[in-house]
Length: 262
Image (cartoon, rainbow, N blue to C red; front, side, top):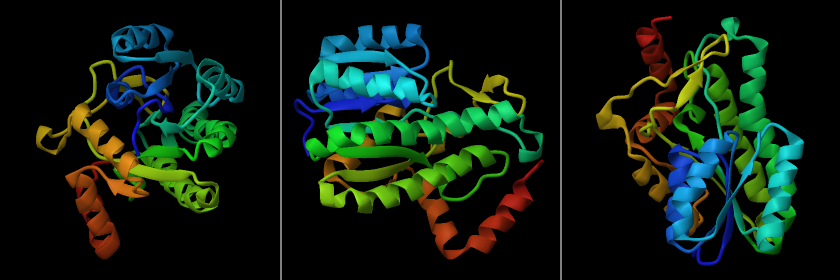
């Protein structure tokens, strides 16, 4: 697959991995619609990216059907086709299930699951017409449920099931469907997660030796998309986690219990 003159939607692209994906796609002559909920950040991202090629933004909350409809319609109006979508938008929440407020549960489910389903449903006819692609950005939290990240793990595991189903359903329509499980990736200083009460808090710092740069992660995701590889782990932590889940699940549970400070 090449990206020259291909039209992609990249969700959650006002910052972080999504913005870097947009940058690298534009370098390869793709045309883009980027989405996010913060118009100021989206506007700044477009200003930074527009010197590289054709890029427009749509302010959208992925958990709202009408917003997803606007993304699909705006892309077709602007470019006349949709070759692919990279579902990068997502939110995380930290805390025990017993402590979670309903608003936090709804926020994570709406953004990470409902929004993915809404937009996929709306753009698939156009993607089928181009024999295009749908790629879900997953996480190592989608390999095994992580304590205190239960909601996030739930949604990322669900992405794998959705990708598995769609990969088979859409094969006859010429559509590639894949899931990219990323590991720890450097965050921008404005990146936040929600606590159990719904308050935005700083994302915990990770061991720098286990953390990939946004450039490396984005490049690896696009290589997977180019090669049309259905499933890929994009970190050493993910590879180790997958190995333990597959061959030593009881040991992994024991390790989690030993290290859990809850």
